[in-house]
Length: 405
Image 1 (cartoon, rainbow, N blue to C red):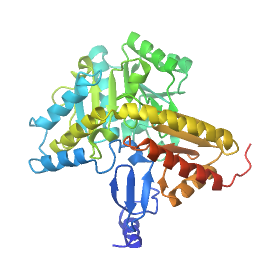
Image 2: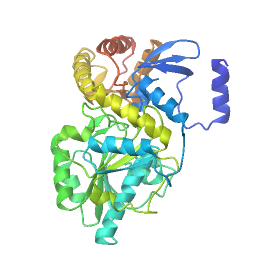
Image 3: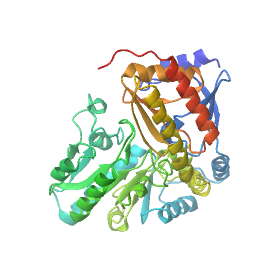
Image 4: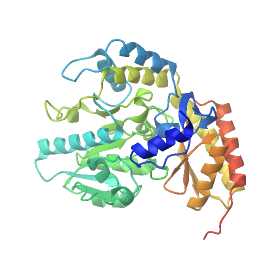
C-alpha cells in the first residue's frame, strides 16, 4: 500500500489525537527507522523513551517468539514463570521488595496513587489522602494520573479532575514544605520532567523532599516512566541522588517495545494491595514478562546506563558549544544522561529545526512548544551520536531567526 493511501485510511478511521509526522514507518533496527519508500532515519526520539534497547532487538525478539509458541496470555488467577522471574530481577536491582505489573505508565501511576491512599487510610483513617505533585509535571492521561499532572493544557475540557491533588512549584523547597500538611499521603515527582521540557530535579530539593516525607510518613513516589531503566546514567534515576523512594513507577522501556508498566514498592506499603484491592487482565502477561526479562537483562548486561552517562556528557558538551555559537537561537541546554532538552527562544525556531532534521533523516521531538528533546535508544554508538549531532548542527545553520525579546 502506498504512503498516501495509508495516511488517508488513518485520517479517515482513527481519531485525530496525534499530530502525526507525515512519514509511514515500516521497519526498524537499532537506532534506525525506514519509511514505506525506503528512506532511512536516525531516531533521536526513541519511541519517547520506550526504545532503550533499540528497534528489533534480537534478544527481545527471541524471548517473544519462544514465549508466543508456549503461552501468550493467561489471567493473573494463575502463576507464571516469566512474571515471577521478571519481578525477582527488578527487585534484586532496586530498592523495592515487591512489584505490581500493569500495561502502561499511566496505569502504573494510577496504581501508585491508589496504593498510597490505601496505605494512609489503613494506618491513619480518613482525611489523609492528598497527593502533592509539581507544576509542569506529566504523569499520564487517565483521570488520577491526569489530576496529578499539573499542566492545565492537558486537563482543559476534561473536568472536574479527581479531588485530592495539590500542586507546588518544581524544585522549590519552601513551596513543598508549605504543602506537606496533615492531609497529605504522598508526593509524586519525576526525576526529570520530560514532557514538561526536560527539567532535572535538583540534588538539594529531592533530598529535602525525602527527608520531609520520611519524617511525616508520607510516601515518596518517583515517576520514572520515561527516564527509568538506564537513561539517566543509572539503572533507576533515583540512584543519581543518593536517596531511596517508597514507590517507583516504570513503563515504556521495560519490555523492549511490548506494552508494560510496573509499580515497585517497599513491602510495608505493598502489603496493603491485598486480595481484590487492585488488578489487571493483561498486566504481567507471559509474553510481556518474557520480553521484560530479555530487555532488562540486556540493559544491565550491556551496561547501557554507563553508556548513557558517557554519551550524555559528550552530547551536552557539544550542545553547550552550539549554544555559544548560536546564541541568537538557543536559550538553554538541560539534561541528564541521554534525556536532553535544547530550549529555543520561540516555538518557530524549534519547529524549523524539527523540519530541517526530518528532511535530513534525523527524527527529534519538540515538547512544550520550544524545546527540542533528544531521547535516542541507549544502544546508540558514539559515532552515531556524532552523526546525529552533525545533522542537528547543520539544521541550526538553516533556520531563520525572528526578533525576540
